[in-house]
Image (cartoon, rainbow, N blue to C red; front, side, top):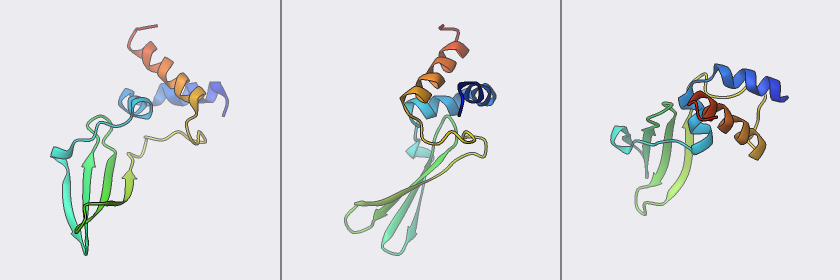
Length: 103
């Protein structure tokens, strides 16, 4: 993806989504929910910034984490961006700094 295409997509993103892509999510366990699935507990919790939901599959007997899944808001991702490398994260970071008037 070219820098111009990345910049165009970033300009359409919510600041909360960009912040989570750079600094990681702000999980709120107090707003979370725990359900039972056989020998497992499924602990779901939303991000307070972007509303992504993280679900952790916890073994009931040991407390060990057996897996983690995520459900992202429809407009969270970037088309054709793929994994974020250091350069892409840097571009997003500069966009955020500009939005906050820090550049």
